[in-house]
Length: 324
Image (cartoon, rainbow, N blue to C red; front, side, top):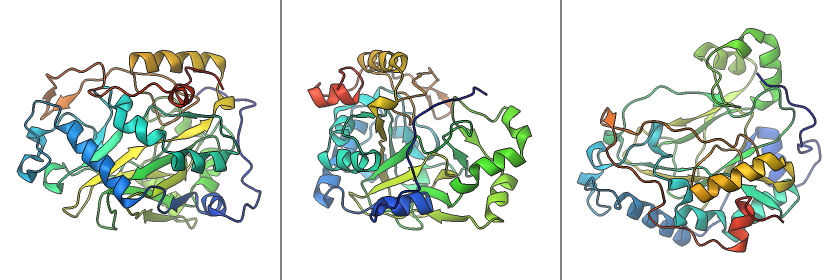
């Protein structure tokens, strides 16, 4: 694994007397009502409209078309990362919502932010979702010290215990470094994914639970913002209900965290409409992967968004194209 030195972080030891204290203590927090229910519903409508831009026969008003045969290719749990979805106008409009920016500005103590080029999740009827095992993981390499990335989910539909959504292992961040010290062999394991991603095996999750960590299915209302430390063990749960899930994965970090080479790469990826990772300032890479539908390579190809974003000054700064 690479070694990281002198990287920026945030001081979790300072008491803030607001929601940040809960984030620092529990490793996650739900900020209620960041967007109004009406605004949240408008984004859901536009996400469904995006599905209708494909030629597979999906119709938002007809649930009989919500099965796999009418959907474009996605990965586990309804996550969409292909088709330049990361740069659809609907996602960029959400990224530039003032309340979203305000939350992350408060967290990091700066208005000069970069945003991740991440995707979205439309998890429809449970009958259209294949059963899957949990894939508990962290998104920050233990050689990175301190809080350097706080991930965000803009929740757009009701999320109850039985619905699909985020599961976190509460308190696991505090044991993250200890786990890797106690299990040095895992650093050489091929389960290390790209850059900072690491997947845990079942017994390794039990190691955390035996030390007091608790698996929690995070519940939220439309318009809520879910935040969690990237060092926290977490995964995405397929629903046991018939309720659909609609979220966008949106994360911001200070522009000052980014190396110049990563800013240049990020700007180039924006121009090419490439997606990257959960990280706004690091892990700037794009990898091609086959989009599979019904077990076969997807015949549909899209290299630009169906609806291009408006390239405002704010958007270009968040994208790393224009400096602050």
